[in-house]
Length: 470
Ligand SMILES: C[S@@+](CC[C@H](N)C(=O)[O-])C[C@H]1O[C@@H](n2cnc3c(N)ncnc32)[C@H](O)[C@@H]1O
Image 1 (spheres, protein in one colour):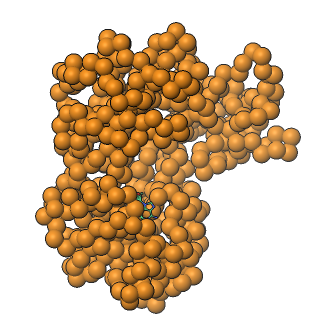
Image 2 (spheres, rainbow, N blue to C red):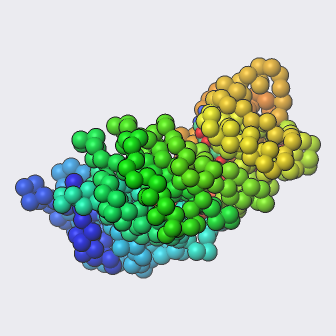
Image 3 (cartoon, rainbow, N blue to C red):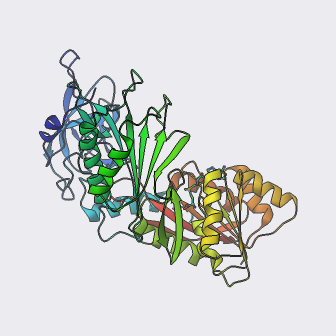
């Protein structure tokens, strides 16, 4: 069921409100109880004990006392904070307590930094003391990739926004404070155009209707904007006039793509794509190099912090111009291409075929002649290299949240690079992999946390390991 805008506007902004689905009158009312919060989980929830049970309660801070609702099923929710923490602030976003996108806006900026620092410090404790987290001066408006989902409310009015926390309820959102503001303005226009062109939002239950999602990518330095209209059908009634009207209101749009998604799962993008306007990709600059970004390829979502993270990763690689560098899980080749300026040669490996194509194109575009990119599983690729007796001086890896695997890590050990630079968006899986490398002769030398995702609990880290005995 979709909630309407009016309802959400009524949510109090300055104190925790029950998040997610409102309790139905027919449902048994949850018990309320008074608790004291004793700590935080790594995903930013307050920890409290009730009847010997551990509760993890969103929007509650250590030291606070609160009345909380404890339903039979699902997470406990704050009803009222009776004693507030000094580090509580009014969440700047009016949707914070219903939307699941951000989890820690109720903490002051300093408390957010301390929270992330403490997670990295604790997890990395077996390896040494991490540096101070690299923060962002303006920790809002940073997302260069923004997806809004479309649906209809009971009155069959079109709504576009995000899902409420732990639910499939769509919340009408007109502005997300971490989105690039340009993206939200374009989405507002698309909502109006859908009405004037009599186009319907897609209904997942009936598999009917037109628009499922809008994905917008923006290039921070280029100013280019990609709009991807994800539709449930290939037909696009009134397409030419729709595009004309959209571009008239937003001349900053440089390319428009229709992605057709008939899947019944939660994947945003389908396989089939049609470029309706422009070149089908946008460009952006990191470290003085220009990268082409397509609708499906991975690209870091915070360009300001990416500059810092990748700058640090290349610095940690300690290149002198002669080294063979492996850029594993290389995506569109960003880290490897930045490293290529200071390396003998770069070998990139990536599983996503489209991203590999982008990496090759990016290397040509930047006139890089010492980098090669290969499609494949990073573990298999490295095992093959090790079996062929090949060597590498530096391995840089930036795997997905699940981390690397034993095939990859054991091949790193066989290849025996002097340095390994491990970039990760999940310090928990990174720590697991660091233990493996430590056991097999590598020593952690530096740990750099970076706040890539302000207002959320996520934290990125770049870690340098060297062969022990150096
Ligand atoms: C966190 S992204 C890093 C991308 C790149 N370093 C960048 O910043 O653009 C992880 C990448 O690993 C790729 N990937 C996931 N599993 C893989 C595997 N087993 N082998 C190779 N690449 C993989 C994903 O497609 C994704 O592009």
